[in-house]
Length: 99
Image (cartoon, rainbow, N blue to C red):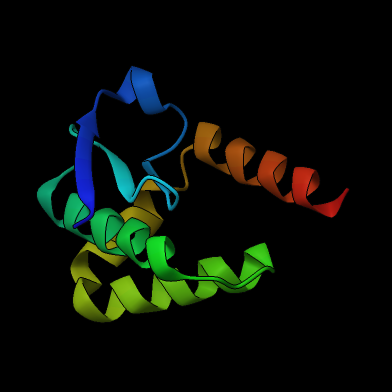
């Protein structure tokens, strides 16, 4: 059974959450609004079973999976992601993946 572990904003910054498939653990920021937290949990739980190799496809599938189940949380998460620190985080992830 997967384990959901709540952590502080400082612990996960700049992420909202992440998954460790080998340990079947999901880490999520405990300070997120409830609807966003439910979306992020669903998103990260999807990652535990996804075996796709291409990072973009993994994110598309996890976002679609969670957005169908938590549409308000998805929209709120998108809005929250327009914060400059989140945009910079995405830029860095994309640059790191392109190497």
